[in-house]
Length: 424
Image (cartoon, rainbow, N blue to C red; front, side, top):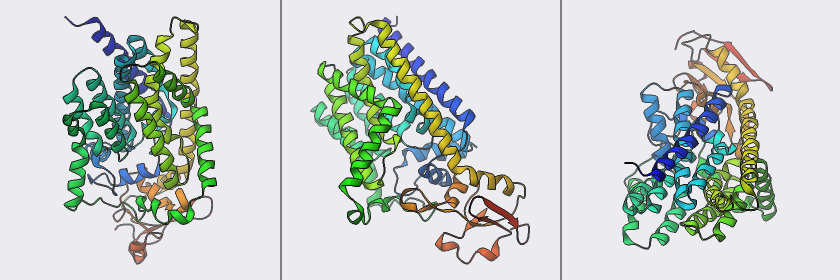
């Protein structure tokens, strides 16, 4: 017979999954196109397991999806399912930390706006949180070796895993916890053996750190911190992060582990802002989803107290609503960002079989180093070198005569014209 608590845990985990998935599917129904500069690179590199210098975990999903015929929207749906499973796993962790009521309350985190949006994009956070919460759920329920093995995969998903794994190792206090470093060790060995990622454009994402000393200012970084605090307020992250501090005082099971992990992620965000030289709502995802476990556990302990059930539920519903609205607003901004390229693609698709010479809009993204060619291949099935050549990319300088059409940025839109033979 199934234990009643185990049945309840599965029930609120399933509810969290469905709530998260419904929100993401609704978002994709309105904004189906790919988003994010990293997302464009990953989709453009869908034929490779290694792209740029990034870890292979997220790219494995894209590669596998592309090989069974998934397009951009299908890949985003796949990532949405993974992110929704991460929310479900978070509800299981909340149940282990704060009890059944906390597990149900964690359903509110399914609506966290930045994760709703970027968890449906081709980014790492969904898979990262799924692996992290699955491993923690096992470890907190006493299945320590299984938790170690699952957490070992973190080292193949996101570089920010290392501080979390160090915190986890300190909490475990056992040599067996070295199993959690398996993925990081495998990646390090692969790099020593010469693993190199495919570059889908000339943009090197690790150039963020080159020449940084000459550009960095404390005042500029402080402005980014202030902007991140505004994002935290606008998205409802403040409620979860402040609530996490309350939960830490409650001496919850695994409370210190989660608190130190959230603090480590906030520290990494501070460093991340130095390299990227800007603050983004996406930076809030991992620390907030971790902090939310402590926050709902603290609320669960006070469910019958001064706040009462009505006040607690009203607070969580308000935060969920505000955060959901934020996701839609951010998605609209991302859609408007790629609109010129998508309009050009509509015209280009009317003449199949043409290789295009693209003179893109430039000055996009961090330090103005990205361009429209990245977007063209990131939101469509087009492949660079097959379907188009890019005037802004060094290796294409002599390819203009090979192309049968031109796509030229003229200041506010693209002019698409045929200029040669109709076939490649």
